[in-house]
Amino acid sequence: MSAQQGPEQAVTMRDVAERLGVSTMTVSRALRGRPGIGEETRQRVLAEVAALGYRPNKQARSLRSGGPSELVGLVVTNLANPFYARLAIGLEEVCLRQGARVVLGSTGGDQAVEREVVADLLERGVDGLVVVPSGHDHSHLGGEQLRDTPVVLAAGPPMGIEADCVLVDDFGGTRAACRQLIARGHRRIGFLGLPPSLWTGSERFRGYAVALEEAGIALDERYVSRHRGDSALAEETARAMLVLPDPPTALLTANNRNTVGALRAVRAGGYPVALAGFDDIELADMLDVPLTVVSYDPAEVGRAAAALLYERREAAAAAQPRRVIVATTLVDHPRPRQVRDDSSF
Image (cartoon, rainbow, N blue to C red; front, side, top):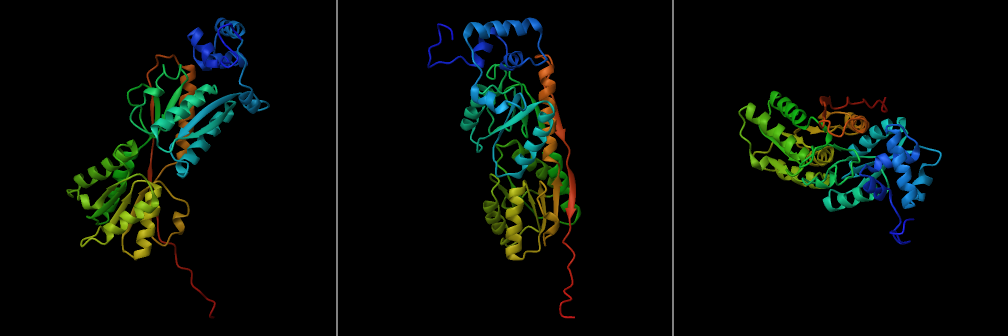
């Protein structure tokens, strides 16, 4: 420990990186003997570590002993949404092959919490971050704020910073689903959306609105709801739409939580309504209500994010940010065939 550091102020990997003007990832790789940095840089790091008296975090080191030697942080907004579980599986699949372990943090959609989670992960010396952003201010995810730790955004594009990102075709998928409902004769289509402040919310609403406009159908605000995905609220909203004097003949939902709410409303009221929704849902093929879903593999979002993260680590710092779009497809889940009861024979 240097003379400047008291016992209550242990030297961190960030301190070493700041003194040398390098990233925490570079310090981490030098200490672990990992490839990807020059020998001169490695020696500079080791010399500075010795001068400052840096000691690796014992807790993090014990977690890694006998297993993966690097950490990748994943920051998501809502652990209750199955999308994030699948995303994490895809991310971990690639990271484990690279000798890294994934550490998960959840923000509840609160940007202040997101800043705290990101800062905590950086302090723990993560070698990269994949973040599902909570809001529009991404300044805390910029290169200077992260001390050059590589970051990839998932499910939302960077705003105010330059960063790699992986997006789902939110606009195209919703537009295709709405077009299919229109092609099947529906003119009054209710939309259970997401807040316009969310990228997914604005893009999926745009897909719905464009499909209506292309078909010459005026957008009726009575048939539109844009709230954070919550099945109970979606059920309540769907019920309100379906008791209008001229109710929608079809409902289009912006995510799987809203689809669940719409299904409950339709089933409880026995309404003859067509349903289509973004995100596939488990057991959709077993429902007694026909359902069309905008399908894609959330694990592919995680795999693509991991690929970008590792490519960024090897790329020059000035390399242009990249954007990957995960494609969607429409899948029809028809009503299951009725099984005849032969018990009376």
